[in-house]
Every structure is written in C-alpha cells, then in structure tokens.
Length: 163
Image (cartoon, rainbow, N blue to C red; front, side, top):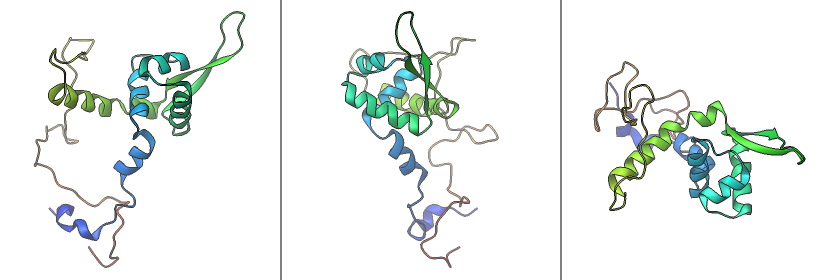
C-alpha cells in the first residue's frame, strides 16, 4: 500500500476534482438553489424568494447550474399565459444529494442554532434518519484516518520521473 499523501509535493492540483466542483457550485447562492431544487422548487420566482436573493443573482445561478448540467429547463404554460421555463434536477444534479446531506449533517452538528437542527431527512420505508457516511466499495464504514490516497488515472505529476 502506497499512500500518495506522503508524495503531495510531487503531484499537481491543476486537475483537482474538488476545485472543479467548486467552480460550479462554490457560491452560497448556487448551493442554496440546489438545496431548494431537491424538495421540488422549480420556478424562477420561487427560487429567488426561497433563497432570498434578487432576480439578477437568481438568473445568473440558474444559468450556471443549467450550463453545468445540474439543472435543466423544462417548458410549461399556464392557461392564457406565455410559455415559461421551470428547472428540474438532472441525473448529474441528483448525484449531488450526498454532498448536500453531508453539509446539512455537519451544520446540524456544529453550527445549528440553540433550538437545534431545523429539519431531519428520513427514509420513507422505515423512518430512519438519512445520513452521509463514508463507505468503501465493499460496504465497510471508513472512520477518519483509515483511508489512503492512491494515484488515479488523471493524476498529474510535477516531476514526470516520480512514481
């Protein structure tokens, strides 16, 4: 077992998946729009109202999240009205749920107000609380300090001769 953490100075962060993700969802408003999309917010005005931001910021974030493929625009038309667009999560967007779950869970533990956590996500089948947990592909729960970093196919080395 070779742990890449011991070789951190030999690999580049130019292709970092975390940095690339933050380029898409790294603003407070982008994260809050995604938070609202999961329970079913779909319309522009509802996003602006629920997130508490102005129309220009709402338009910019929705455009960015749509361009990144997390949301898609879906036309709808109410009787007597012009065609408008609603926003819904794509498969790529739905794959972001564990990230939001982990953020909520951390916030519930470390920064919740005096009254405690505001919402609890529960599994429909049994009522158990939904939590983000690190597991390996074999199903083992992985505690802090019990994992290592291995080279992936996209690892960029600063020194091409480094192993």
